[in-house]
Amino acid sequence: MFYTTLMRALVVGAMSALHVLAPAAPRAEEAARVIEQRLRQWTEDFNAGRTERLCDLFAVDLIANYRGQPEKSFNSICSALQRDVGGGARAYRYDLDIDEVIVSGDLAVVRLVWHLTVTDRETGTTVASSDRGIDVFRRQPDGQWRIARYLAYEIEDE
Image (cartoon, rainbow, N blue to C red; front, top):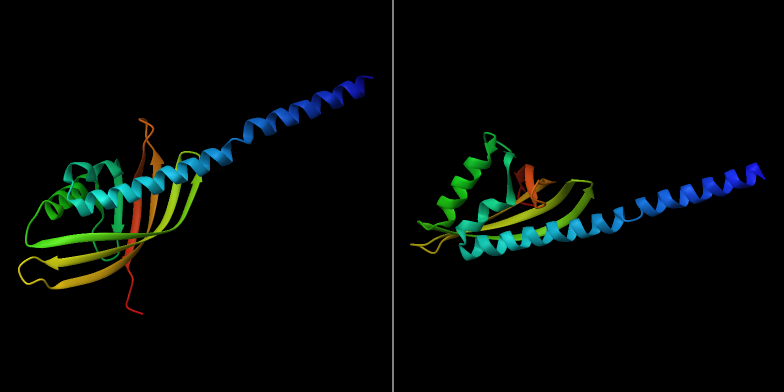
């Protein structure tokens, strides 16, 4: 009798533990969807010149690495975005391909490719490039997913 009761308690305990763990997959899927939406909204905002929205994608402790350039921070990235998108001699347009979003707890990794087209406003000359990157998102205290780290490099012509 003791063993039967013990076994029942273990089975109930194990099933309770599985029930508690089960919601993790839907939460991860929802987080991946939110992150993808934030990236797509950022692309739309960038292309529309909405400079006031561009820095919100990045965490204040951002560390950004692009091959061959000095490490950048939240302030340097935001300043460059504000300057470049705010007008000037060149027009910029991004297109985005998301390869993969992996979420684990409060961290997520996104493999993606950014396609940039730069147009000289005076001559109409365009230059296109593509950068492969890995963005590491962290859920912030306000609940928003923001990029805390990223690595990127230009894709060489194939």
